[in-house]
Amino acid sequence: MEESVLSQWTVIRSIFAIVQWWGFNVAVIIMNKWIFQKLDFKFPLTVSCVHFISSAIGAYLAIKVLKLKPLIVVEPADRWRRIFPMSFVFCVNIVLGNVSLRYIPVSFMQTIKSFTPATTVILQWLVWRKNFDWRIWTSLIPIVGGILLTSVTELSFNMFGFCAALFGCLATSTKTILAESLLHGYKFDSINTVFYMAPFATMILALPALLFEGACVVEWLYTFPSVVPSMFIIFGSGVLAFCLNFSIFYVIHSTTAVTFNVAGNLEVAVAVTCSWLIFRNPISAMNALGCGVTLVGCTFYGYVRHILSQQPQEIPPKNKSEFVPLVNEKVEDKDND
Image (cartoon, rainbow, N blue to C red; front, side, top):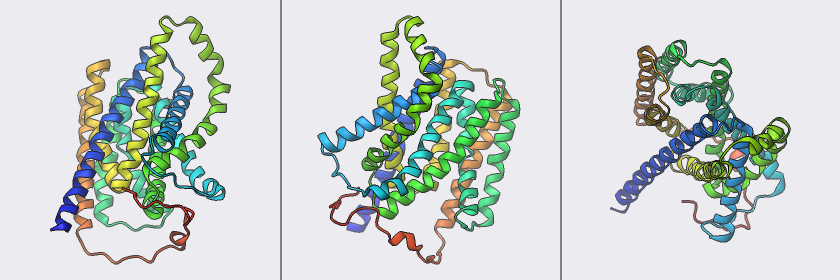
């Protein structure tokens, strides 16, 4: 009986994590596009930096002030050796997403993001030497085909924005795999992950944002009408970004990297619909067909993963790195839910 209740609670928590991530994700995407297009604040590095600063402040308040989670003390060497690389990939992922939004419509950017399951499988195969069933590779064919069809028929195609979104898929896959290892393998909860990653990401991005966009931002502040309301929107997107960053790691903590990516592709339909209703960007029939093929491919991919997960598998030998603790043993972190 207790196992049944626990299983039901696990499913409910996973569904809740995915739904709240969908909501924050769509809200941040739409608000960022609004900032770039309607407010003419075309500075993706600065917007990303505002997001990281907001995330750092939010995580500090959650841990130090509200005491929502106990602080997991991590040795300085482990911070630089394990958290910093993931922070760098996390930073690249956010920046590329904002850069792509600067140049291409939300619908096109979200469709390209559906390529993430393919990049996740390829990365795990090439770098982590993980073998996959032939059905997994077959399920990727409609995803790749749909992306190609959408790209060829996109009416607002921009090569720079397309490349940014494509490399963003690679960064998303890398970040998701690394985050899953950190959260599951080392019992690192979501708030503590943002607590340690956001300051690193801010440090990485602050200087480039100042050098490449600082002067233009100052000029915008002096020339753009209604600066104060616009700044509320920009910093409001930072607050939503903190909620999104927290929800991302909460989803990874509650599910797996593959489930996270599949759920992200189902979110594409909602984001595309909302963006079209708000921005009215033109979408051709073939473009919509390509997006539909991609979503069908993602659904088939998720189905194949589910079928394979039901089959008994041999437990692979653990890597030696899994036995190396990330957290000091003196620190109590009993609750990782």
